[in-house]
Image (cartoon, rainbow, N blue to C red):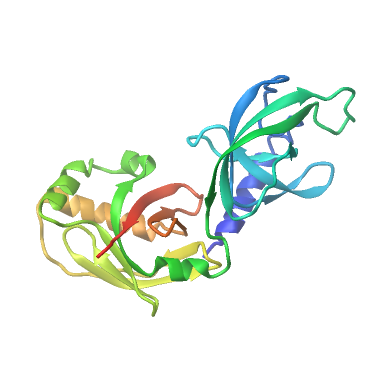
Length: 252
């Protein structure tokens, strides 16, 4: 089972193959005084600039991939364990050293700062309880044989939902759409999650529900990473840190 942090480190190393990027946040310089939004990930990754170092990860849109950021942002006090949305601008640096950036990054505003649990083992406690499906990711839907929207709507109309319940003893269970399933799970380092073989009941349902069930179980078996945001939103990721599905905490 892969560590989520290790997966990100591998990704960062691959990104480095495209060049260190003296301008830090991307291949193209935004120019002096250009103002932009930067999203900052909740942990740093190993990178190589002048020498081995740790880089923040940034992106300019929530739809973009994370990129390594080799510079510093003046006025920004980074704290690991939080995701940030920043407004920044740049200034030209006169006669920068050959191995340094020609731009100086300056913080204008911290638009948001969201806590993301990163303590070792913290995820196990945060997972406890029952969660219901909010949505499959666009990537999962694009790869699906059929659109599950109709089946999900039919399930909701009858008071049902795709669900996951995590128990303290390492067992997991829930509804996969048509049948109930049970199995085991393991979480390492707070964010590396995997499910063991999942066994279920064998009730037959209409084809759309059976297709939804197959999609649900395939998605769960592909899970290798997990994040819980604000104690109420569960996000499941694959080995490449691509989002698979989101779930909401079920409240009594």
